[in-house]
Length: 216
Length: 246
Ligand SMILES: Nc1ncnc2c1ncn2[C@@H]1O[C@H](COP(=O)(O)OP(=O)(O)O)[C@@H](O)[C@H]1O
Ligand SMILES: [Mg+2]
Image 1 (cartoon, chains in turn brown, yellow):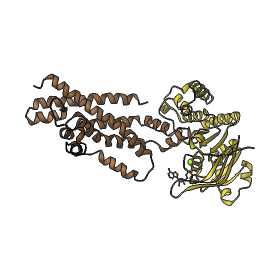
Image 2 (cartoon, protein in one colour):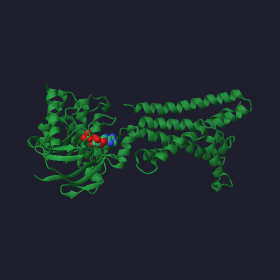
Image 3 (cartoon, helix red, strand yellow):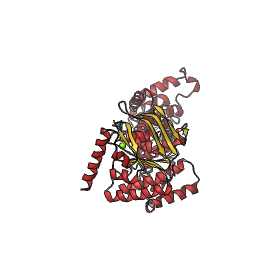
Image 4 (tube, protein in one colour):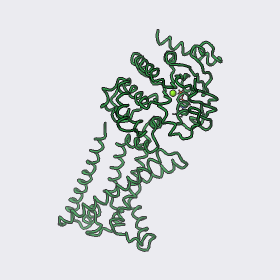
C-alpha cells in the first residue's frame, strides 16, 4: 500500500497545481478572450481560430515545448524550474489558457450586440461595459473555467515530462496512476483514479453551485 | 427656439452597402422630434449615430453650440431606449440604477432617483423582481424609467412602444407624453405609427433610403410633402393606420 500520508500529499499537490494553473489561465484568458470577442482589429478571426485550435492542444506537445525551454541547457534553464511543481503549473496554464480564452470569447459573442449599444447609451465607460458583459455571461464563463480545470486536472503527459513524477515532489494523481499501472498494481491505480474523479467532481460541484446561484 | 443638437454633413455607415447621410438637422430645446420612415430607411442607424455609438465617418455634431469632443462625456448627457428593452439580468431596481451608477453619483441620490422614476412609471412594485421575469409592457416601462432616471439633456427612443398590445401601448404613450411635457425633456423618437407621430411630435422628420428628406410640423409635412416619394410613403402610412382601426 501507499502510505496514507503520501496519498494526501499527492492529492493536495494535484489540487494546488491545477487550481493555480486554472486561476492563472482565468487571469490571463478573461481579458484576452474579452479583447478577442469585443475588439475590432486586423487578424481577429485568424487569432480566434488559432485559440480555438489551441483548445485541443495535446498536453504532450505543450510538455515537450515547456521541457525544452526549461531544460538545464535550454533558454530558461537558468531558472532551475525543470522537475518542479512550478514547471507543471506553467505547462498546465498553457493547456488551460486557450480553453478559457476561447470559451470566454464565445460566451461574450453570444450576447446581443445591442446590449453594448444600450450600455453605451446609458453612459458606461469601456471598463464598466466589460464588467456588465462579464456579469451577463457569467454562466458560460464559469463553464469555461470548469472546462479549463477539467483539462488540466486530468492531464498526464505534460506533468510527467516537465515534472518528472518525483516522489514527494512532483508526483501528482495522474502520474501516480501511470506509475502504479506500469507496475501492475491495478488496485492502487484504481483507488487513485477514484480519488481523482472524486476531486474533479468536488471542484466542479463547487463551481456549479456558484454558477447556478448566479442564475436569475 | 434654442438649438440643442445641430447635425451637419453627418455620414454614419451601417454596413458596406448602407450609410445614413444627413446634410443638416437641428433639434430644438424642449421639442419632440419624431423620426418616421419605412423599415430599413436608417432610423435606428441615425439614432445610434447621433448617440455616437455607431461611428460617423464624417460630419459635425454640436450640443448646445459646442462641438462634441469626448464621446463618453457627451453620452452621459443622453438617455437611450432601444426597440427591445435590453434589460440586464439583475433586479428591476438595479436596472434602473445602472446608468446612475455608471455616473458615480452618491448612493443617496441614486436611491432617491431610482425610487422616484420607478414610481413615476408605475413599476415600483416590481423593484425586487428579476428583470427577466417581466411582461413586455413592464419591461418597456423599466427601460423608460432607466433612461428617464438619468434626467437626460436629450432622450433618444427607438420605437419604444412597438410590439405592445393596443391598450398597453396607449396607456404607456399617455404616461410618457405627460412625463415629456412635465419635464420638458428634448426627445428624438422613432416610430412608424401615424397616431404616435401625431400625438407626440412637435415636428416630424421623414427618412427615406438613408436620408432625412423633409422636416417640419406634422400638418405641414402631410399637407405639402416635398416630393412624390414622401407623398407615397405618407399615404401608405395613413392607409395602414386606417386598416388597423377598421
Ligand atoms: N444588423 C445589421 N447589420 C448590418 N446591416 C444592417 C443591420 N440591420 C440593418 N442593416 C442595414 O441598415 C439599413 C438601415 O437599417 P436601420 O437603421 O435599422 O433602419 P430602420 O431603423 O429605419 O428600420 C438596412 O436597410 C440594412 O441594409
Ligand atoms: Mg429600426
